[in-house]
Length: 69
Image (cartoon, rainbow, N blue to C red; front, side, top):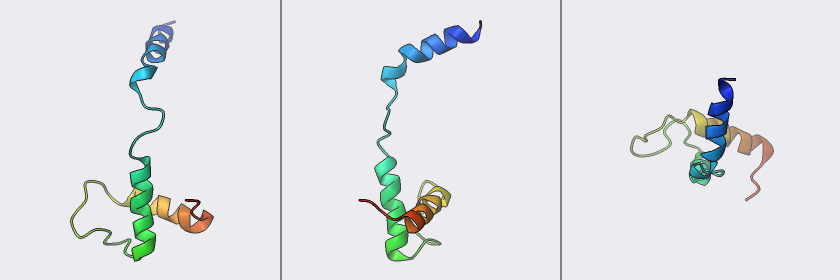
């Protein structure tokens, strides 16, 4: 019973949230740089704002499954 108002509020707030985040392509692009440059341990000249773990996982899936772009 207490959960219903929260679910109702989230339903009407759906227009404020993106169904496709704008940065998904950016994550793919950075992971592809890992594969193209073979520098996954030192991915960029300058330190980046995120740890490369997510990019390693995406790059590994690209290596195993291929890139369809």
